[in-house]
Amino acid sequence: MKLQILKALVLLCVLTTPVFAQEEQKANPERYTAHNKGKFFIYWGGNRESYTKSDINFSGNGYNYTLYNVEAHDKPKGWNIDYVNPCRMTIPQTNARIGYYISDHYSIGLGVDHMKYVMTQGKTVRMNGYIDLPEGEAGAAFNGTYNNVPVVLTEDFLTFEHTDGLNFVNVGVSRIDDFSKYIGITNTDIVQLNLTEGIYGGFLYPKTNATVLSKRRHDDFHVSGYGISVEAGINITLFKHFFILGEFRSGYINMPDIRTTYQGADRASQHFSYFQKMLSVGGIFRL
Figure (cartoon, rainbow, N blue to C red):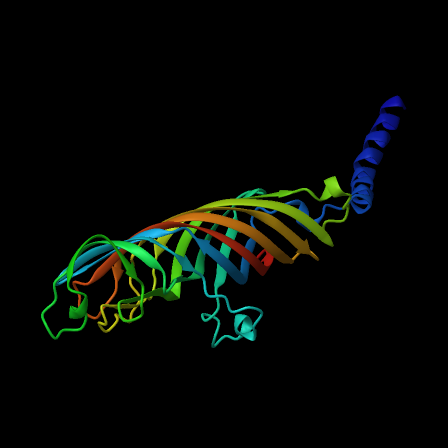
């Protein structure tokens, strides 16, 4: 009799355990936002930049000179429909990235920072080097040897922009940490606040708009150098699948091979640091 009672109790436990487990899961459901591993994300947004001063070297047939401490700025579009117009999305300064979470906290991603760099006209800078062009050729009016000579950056002497894109094509790793509970948010499937950090590296693929010594400009994309950047920001995820991302980025760009004019030997080189502010919208999902 005791053996039969024991068997009955074991059978009762086996049959009722799934029921209690289901009831517990209903009472404490695991949220979609509790785990990120295996999810994909994509975002699109706009940016603003500030740049450090840089020394720019220009060289070609008949000239080789360096301009020191050249100032530059970005070229903002402001709040504009172009950010969402498929035919004009490359006109403003933008950021795009697609990535995959390899764990709950870490993701790998591929992105493009479409920045714009404009040399500030009208400034006086120091110049070293020489210009020795044939008489009658464009730019020959500036012939001479320069040794720390102050020159004014007039349009007939130089215009220099990466405005068809200071395009930074990069790959990298980013981290995300949920801090919702620290500010009293309990249902993260509705609203979730995350801290983000990342580090990226890649190459520069600009379409440089430069008029050097009145020569006709080179008008094509060209791999010009490399860059690295770090970032930190806040991710606000809404209703599990949509997010707003605000970030600050700081980076270093080195471009030793910038195409400037239609003549193949003409080149420029420069390196500088930058600081970027970015605001993007995106989505996160599982396939």
